[in-house]
Image (cartoon, rainbow over all chains, first blue to last red; front, side, top):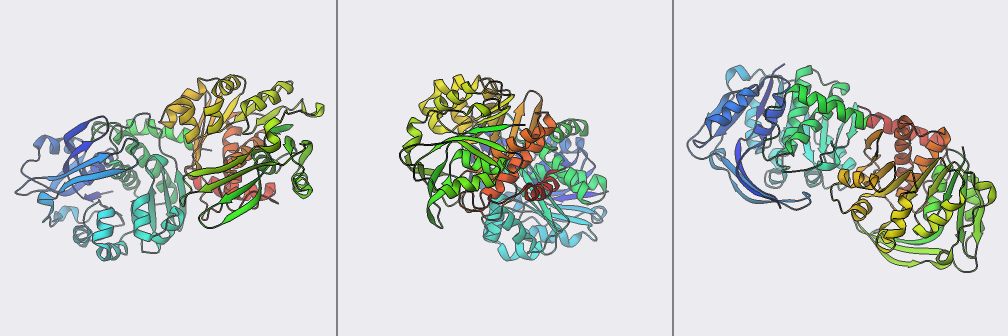
Length: 299
Length: 299
């Protein structure tokens, strides 16, 4: 099955209480692609500036990512600077430079328009809608978003929610979108906005999946040392969608297993800056940690 | 199998953002007994004052609790007043009146000294040790404690930890006891203090069990409306120990199922003040919610 992702490629500056690290390879589609690429070939549509290192595209290709849909625009690549609190429970955006992403008008190569599995990674809902318009018959479309878009472009986001099959949100985003503090109620309210499924991520406290035919809740994989949580949500989505697309169905049983793979992928993500700990991971690595997680969560 | 609990019976005053409720029936051994009583007869050792209502003891008896070990002392029953924050994530002790509990010297009736399953509910480690001294050959002893005792009586608590099989702690207590912020590391450090097993409770985020032959992590049952979280931890322990004692073994498979029963019991507890929503629950009720939880957490 074919899996297409549209999102950002970026260079981030990450500040933790231990270290400040500039020019860390990141972006929603970067984390997603490296994780999903362990399961099946991934088609990527994104934009980068002239400063984007050829070696970073080559790394994606080594992970099974078709980068022919990556546009090279004049200007600099998207950049984000964030600072984490000591307990990782909050993060502050210090600076966002949209750069070439500001005028990004996604053009999906003809060969990719027939993708069956589509992930609209975190980006403006206007950009996400333009991408969705070009995919002819997606079988399963999943949307990610963030607080910025919920605040700034709520009408566009609500319109888009009626066109997708599933949405992934973290606890804060679900509360902001619905006004419900209780996460179960928030998830129910999200389903009322259109999607058939909602995946609600709670960071170190795990995640749950809810839809009319499935309700599955899962604790996080116990990571002993978090280095940088940036991209954990995108990586979760990559593991989830990678597994689902590789199986070619969205049966509840498949999606439950996919939640475990998403959790495994995210657990690698947080163990190093950027995609440092994800790079080079094979499906064999994922399977090893999957079995370990299965042992921890099976009653 | 026989299950014995030593702990407090109390009248609490509970302040939530919605309501202030005086004289709510509570205490660590109260919550524990009502939950465990659904699984097997429970033997209770505690102390109450002259103000303790006979109807409240009769209620315990209706739940299968042998109250012949409850001492009636001159004075008033233990009282605690607490206030919860709007999101339930923190609570403040407004007042603690030890009353008859201040000079409690537990005397376990001879018929109860042969108990095989023993729960030392939250109380001073000095009182807990005196109780433990009187039980001749317990097969499985579990200890609960709280921040107060970790701060005030650490040497006595550390000594007691070397004499029990398992300890139940919430996240804050585990961090306070070990100095480790990461809960996996904290759990590992607790095991280094003596117990073979540690159950770490994370409130709305679930709980995990760790020991040399078992590592099991479980999300909480999704409660849509929390009314009063007081006693949820004691109730969890009651469901856990009730099931384990009813099975008469501590095989990993038994303890995993017991974690689900503890979660189910705690989910009822928080739905009303005190033991309001636990009262009258039968094993049949517990089994119904157990099956629902099993469906939610099974991969």
